[in-house]
Length: 224
Image 1 (spheres, one colour):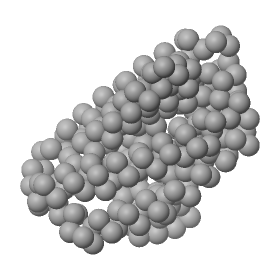
Image 2 (cartoon, one colour; image 1 turned 60 degrees about the horizontal axis):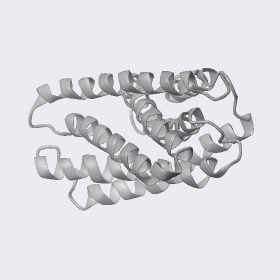
Image 3 (tube, rainbow, N blue to C red; image 1 turned 30 degrees about the horizontal axis):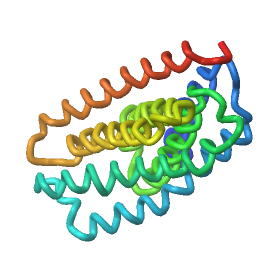
Image 4 (tube, rainbow, N blue to C red; image 1 turned 30 degrees about the vertical axis):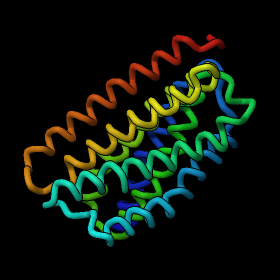
């Protein structure tokens, strides 16, 4: 049974990674750099979870307290996770010569995001059962994928628009932090059970716009 749970924990992130790599139609990235980005995403999972645990221990994780839940969802989770992923993206693949079209921002951002989401899922698999992993496979992992595409879209634009670089990166970071924070808040709070519907709405909207951004970078690839 544990092998099945572990497989289900790993498979969604790998499938999303494979899908995004296949969407990079005109100038494929070297597999080694894709692997390094995925592993880098896995490595940031540990410091991120340490910060989140510290916030929980400090009393931020209180599902029946709106203000505490907002702080936990938007700052301890969304800001920290998206900030860590952005940092890796800017430090490693962004500076490489092979980052030579806006689409690469999406590709490498998703590799980092899926590395993070996959290891996070594996750690959850060790603590929770099959039902939790199945739910995360259909919600949390696709959410990380959509947020990573949106962030990578703006970072990809920023790479080739130096006069707007900072503004585009900040815009992308703030947007995914707000989306991620809202998604987590609606799930984490326990005062109004119907708000879980809004988490589904945020996820659907994020996936919709992520898809449009993916197509936009495909259509405007200089290698097309």
